[in-house]
Length: 388
Ligand code: GLA
Image (cartoon, rainbow, N blue to C red):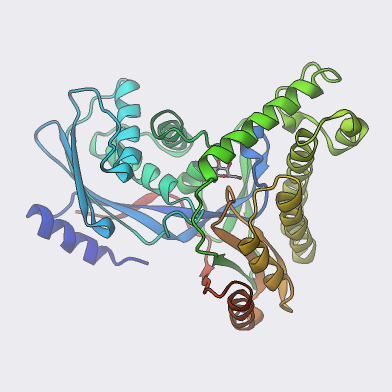
């Protein structure tokens, strides 16, 4: 956790005055329900105790100045001319996109000085970008008294990513960063955005292992998978004309027609439809305190992501295989979009030290590199870390 007093001091050093507020928005780990959100399906993410902080203070002009402490970089843009993408400061586009979204929605904004710092690892699949978007949106809605919170804030942040940054992500990451609950995961229905908090087991820990592999293909392959899901929906419409998304096809209906689907659409649809089912059953298992069943569903999710959805990579498979062999590990899978990044495992508290030792050694042996292991606590969504 980053000490807010240090952030306050950094802001004062930069701007010569203290911040009006400091906002904290968490990263996330998804426990199960991967690549289901943009198919109108179910996800089960938790906000984690790693977050992006935005310290902010209004200015009396129409400019936004941003200091990115961790990147040793700065950017500035004006609110009274159309906001463009920055080529030289790509990190700034998450902020620009959110601010532009507020202006396009008709809100009047004043200028602001911002300072940003984060302990969400960047590019690791723990949603550092969603955390930045949500923290930025929250800061601007406080400074300008807009009262844009919860679901509305999540949709604003997702809109920035879709239309300004250009990644066609679903709603999961921004939603959990906005609405996460301490010690709970949220079972989110990505069709109507209803959600249900699911308590996490008291005697198990969420353990994240970073493969430290660059997620280079992530953007284009992500959009390819979305296209393949759209193709699957078109094909299923010959049997079920009224469906809107893969969410509307049950596992039984899939099996009835799978022989008539071409590859790779068949495999992609199999993943999404079975994963949706696993997410719902997984949440029910956790509710019932049946961690063993939940762990088996996590393992099945990884196999499906690896073989049917083809978004894993050998380094993540190595981390998952090592984790699944540790006594006391209930289950393990890749988490997030894939093509690199992190795995998530649910581990009995008393087995966490053994897990760390064994997985680190096995990963080193398989790849010659080190993994970074984080034991995460599910945390609350965005809010004020401190105010003036
Ligand atoms: C990324 C996207 C999410 C979701 C996951 C895959 O994190 O931002 O919307 O699609 O990939 O489950």
